[in-house]
Amino acid sequence: MNFSWQSICLTAFGIFSAARALDLPEYAGLKTSLNNSILEVTLHNSKSLRNLWDQDTQDGMTDLVGRLQKDNETKVVIFKSDVPRYFVGHLDLTVPNLPEVVPAFSRLIYNISQLPQVTIGAVEGRARGAGNELLVSLDMRFAVKNDVLFGQPEVGSGTIPGGGGSQFLPGLIGRGLAMEYILSANDINAVDAEKIGWINKAFDSSAEMYKYIDGLTARFALFPQGGLSAGKTAINRRTTPTLEDLQGDVNLFLERIEDPIVQELSVKGSAGNETSAFELELNLGENILVLYQ
Image 1 (tube, helix red, strand yellow):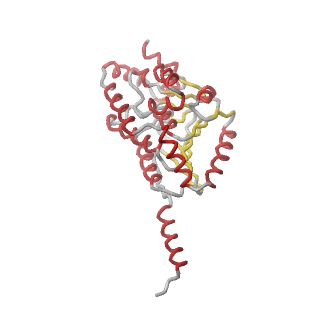
Image 2 (cartoon, one colour):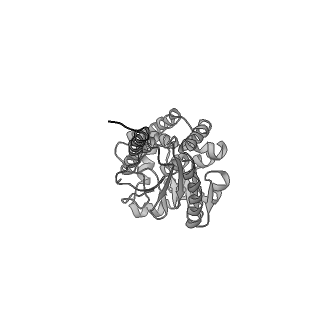
Image 3 (spheres, one colour):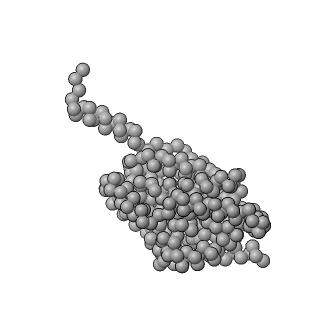
């Protein structure tokens, strides 16, 4: 049987294309939408008014990131939320096996920071704890100005950010400001976050934000993925923490949760129902002081 060189190349290209296409299942804690080389990931915890990062979220993100690590068609991944007033509240501290969940979360955050795709956060609502740690691991962060807050509240309850917040944030805003916001457990709004480099840009409306993001992604979609990935690799060498750095924070976090004071504060913080927690955490940077009254 005779084969032309052209037919062999076309056949090989077809096999290669089929092998590299991104095929995503349905996830319990995420919604995904793939449009050519642009993937949108919507964080959606239907069980939480605060869009807490729970086991479903973690399992879905871990599977998704594993697929993206092997994918060479997708060029951009946009992370957003459809839960009103919350991007991601924080880690759900009621998850079973917390000492196992936190190290796995830390590894996931590191893997997200090293993805070959351009990663973008589009923020409407609150992003604290695990939600902010996801954001600072991304390549770019954009937000609307109204009703948006960022924060790492962990020190206010006696622990530390266990998923990379203490590692990534100083690189974005500097050591002094990272000390201020992490040690005070205070929130920062989108306007001030833009000024200090916590986020890239803040917008007056959601429409303006997505118009800007669409303009960027349209450019990225034109460029070879190899160039985008190589550019990221070069920048990451200078700007991202190592997995060992993140593991050090995990160890500190796991030490802190054994402290009786932390356990007492955790009990006080978990009092009430989801509705009362939703209201309390709208301004958690201020309301965390209630733990000490």
